[in-house]
Length: 240
Ligand code: UDP
Image 1 (cartoon, rainbow, N blue to C red):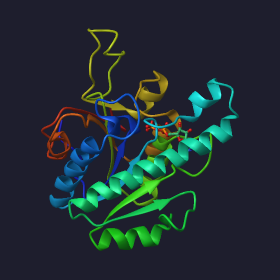
Image 2: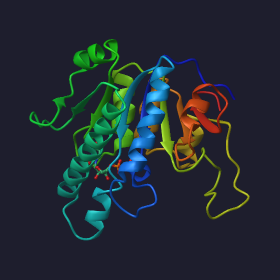
Image 3: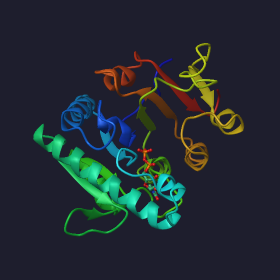
């Protein structure tokens, strides 16, 4: 299945992929490898917006399950995404890629606030823009943040780099007969509650006609392969 033709993409990386083989936190060697993948994609001529999750450090739901106030726990989760964004910024800049971090929670000493026109200018100047802190509100996830920024920045596709190689009709870790979709419609993902991104993120992509490309970022070189239509992936789009 060939990729839609893309010039500007939003790449969403779940926080977990930054852990490498660790159980928690940031593995600098893994972040450096991921940065290399991003650089290769950028060198192929793409404009790249990045959103990174925070699940390798803190998830609001996990805090709430242990008795924390949900909104308070979500603020902590959002701060975790800023840490990951700064780690990725550092790794990209060590490879000579110019970047800017824009956070939905203002922290002027550390990074810029989210300003769409400024982000546009950064892309024009060949910089990678890393959007941190999701949508800036509790009760959301970085998937929703990714869908929102993809729409706002008029990205041609949302690439979701995760630890599975696409969308399956059942959990492939539990069911060996689970089948991977080549393409699947937004409506089927929502109706069957398929594990892609949370429903609000999928609905936002559907309403703005942004294809979601789900692929494994753990395999070296896979981002570049997916972008040339050679990799293994699932594309979520209007027609399944
Ligand atoms: N979060 C939030 N609002 C947002 C984005 C994130 O409250 O707009 C919080 C939420 O607690 C979430 C955590 O930040 O659990 C980390 O983000 P996420 O779980 O999306 O990270 P990922 O699963 O992609 O690593």
